[in-house]
Each structure stands twice: as structure tokens, then as C-alpha cells.
Image (cartoon, rainbow, N blue to C red):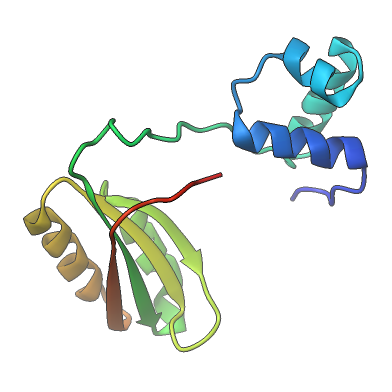
Length: 146
């Protein structure tokens, strides 16, 4: 379990990493007004304390031209949550799964190269044991991502 972030420099460091997780320690140090070793120590502490749990690749607009993205809102029987999440994790088109408040329990982000594959994936989600109903919104364009 991660600890809360109470330090202003840590919050600033995390903000910089959200914009570019590949930023060099030297550049981060300059932007934060601290030494390179101070940034390295803070980053090591953030990783050790699981405040920073990992780094990822954010795909550029041209990486998967024509890919279709959708958010599937999923209402479930709570007794089946673990099995549903496990099944979703096994679907390569599912990019993210988040719990939500309100009439739907999960928000699932799906990305597929064809409308047929998107449709198949959404059908597969709807057929999972414990899924009561779904509602889907196809995303048209990303304006930005952090």
C-alpha cells in the first residue's frame, strides 16, 4: 500500500513525471531546483513506498492509426467482481478497468483496430458471468492525456 504524498517537491516531481516519465534526472533536478542526487533519492523513495508503482508507454496518435476506442459502463453482480476483473485483464483489447460509483460498477476502456473486433470484445464483456448490463460510448478523439 502506498503512503500519502505530503511533500510539495514530491508532488511537483510526480507532476513532471506524468507529463514525461522519461525526463532525465538532470532535467528534473533543474526544473525542481534541487540536485540530481536529491531527485534520484526522492524517486527511489517514491518507488520503494509504492507511491510510484511503475512507468508505462503512452501510445502516440500515429502508433495505431484507425484504432477505435470505447468506454463500456458495466453493471455487475458484486459477488462476481473478482472473476469479471480477471476475465477483463485477459482481454488484450481492454486497456483499463476502473470501479465507479452510480448505476454502473465498472468503466472499461476498450481499444480495437476494427469495428468488428471492438464489437466482439464488447459482446464478450456483456456475456461474462455476473454482468447485468452494459452501456457503451465510442470515443471520437483524444484531446490530451496525462
